Amino acid sequence: MRDVIYLDQIEQAEALLKPPRIEVLRHLAEPRSCTEVAVELDQTPQRVYYHVKRLLEAGLVRQVAERRVRGIHEGIYQAAGRSYWLSPGLVGRIGLRQTRDRLSLGYLVDLMEDVQADVAALDLTRPDLPSIGVSGEIRVRPEQRKAFLDELQQTLQDLFTRYGGAEGDAFRLAVACYPKGNPDDRA
Image 1: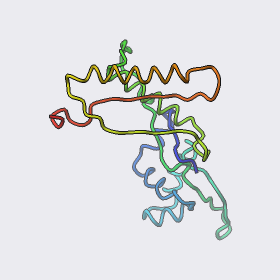
Image 2 (image 1 turned 90 degrees about the vertical axis):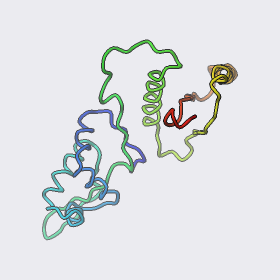
Image 3 (image 1 turned 135 degrees about the vertical axis):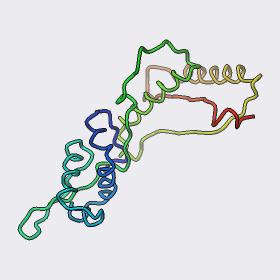
Image 4 (image 1 turned 90 degrees about the horizontal axis):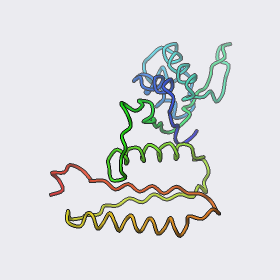
């Protein structure tokens, strides 16, 4: 079972985003038959199998075993991932892409979409995956905002210059800086 399944096809999203299928998927965190899930959900095995079949077709569930029960072959199924990400690209861009400078919210949203796609493409099963995530809160008075952003940009540019050679493993560095919470709460 993968940690994260990244859904970037509309058919996958359609298969997933139905409340009964999400419930079936939750019950398939551990390998189970449709009959076992049906008992837990107080549904018929046929109804559960219908949803499992759609999830199978979308690659969100996989058959992990098969057993004979009273002369019938019964599949054992398990969710393909522990969590599922929906690509922002599923909706697509509405209207024309506007030119955005790096200080705009639109640029930040585009950057986060790129980061999400990059992370989803990684082999998350590797225990030695070299990565780091850092998050914190910085408080900047309005009159210091420009100086803060300039210093942040210079610090990052120094890193890019120091480590931007053509040799070695390539890493992507994305920094997001945005106002936290409701603007009225920051007073």
